[in-house]
Image (cartoon, rainbow, N blue to C red; front, side, top):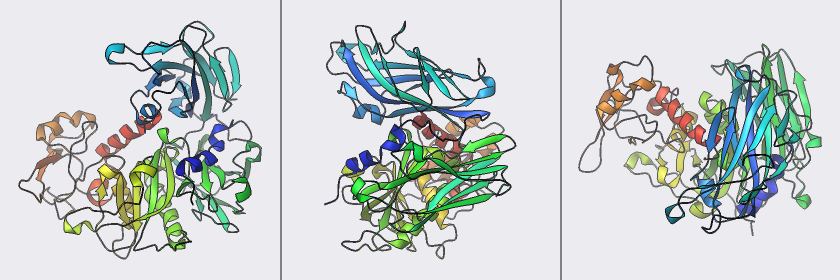
Length: 540
């Protein structure tokens, strides 16, 4: 019997729960990524008289406050006085703009959510000092943390306890890393095979790219490797080279089932013109961990990441009754990550906000050419895989793909003989789920590259990319400087029911992600940034 997904995650936990203080890339970039992770919140005294506490946090990083009240991860922890949520809050900080050079101000407040007859929310004391907030700063380079009278190494956990009547104990850590991208600089970092088996040769490839995702000769290109994710002392800079655009590191997969050791960790770093960037650490699974889902690229807690899970189409990738491993499926997954995600700039620049998983329960991609989208979902989808933000049923069939947004799932053909942009189809469908973008294709728009108006059309309340009324489009033009009113074009949906609906779009009619699987246009990017913003506040 396979172990539950929960146990699998617990087995994978040590990498991001241990101090990241040994042999790690430097953090002296012009911009830095500052992360505050709340590992545990425990009631130590008092209450508000309204039952068990419903904790949430307000975290301020260099003047910007993040609040995770009413997020999915916060709702899941309600009613427990002692939680270990791993809530991560993050922000990119311009070190040149800091009020005190080299010092990033930090503050953490722990609140208890109330409502109805309980009236307002309550601020609990988490500090030994005056006031209730854990306050201080992170020193950028060399990295250290000073909070509430304690000095910690970056990545090391600290325990902070309040002294007031209503008080909590908080275990937390702060990390300061180089960002995942910089203007004109990108780093692609991936391993193959995506799911290596015992004895296989694993290759980690670091590729230096410019802003157009073309090869860029790096001043410095590094690959960092950690064979034992439970021991940061095994973390080493395995490759350090210069004057190249690509580098590789190889090793032999050797999972240790007796020790429940089924993973390794790595990251890639590059520098150009004095500006370094770092892919971020990611963990990968090797061998069979005995779970129905497991990560192949795990960068951090699900509350602060978009979890994309890959599902094998039963018609394309047959699994044997005792062999849920299909070499073609594993090969295709690696290409999807490298092409559909790391080959698309808005996703590559946010690579540290994605987790990629394999689900061994198979599904079946439905052909949407019949006017419906009726994918067969993997068994246990709603129960066992509720953590997934998007499920991608990968297949090689010659059929039209579609997304079931209510079920958090979509299909993606990888058959390039059927359509040359097959891997961009996966990117387009990811635009639907989890980002909530609507289709924009329609041949009624002058110059349109499409031939139909039978997509999935809807207007989002926040950061929409299409509009139900022309005046809504015009009113929103201020979000896109330089875009004229004439950019707003109406079209009529080809509806299969009793009436057609008119919509308005202001994005270009071609070379658009949601038209013909092209570039992300301004309204697409705005919606993506909106969703990524939730991840920064532990609200994915």
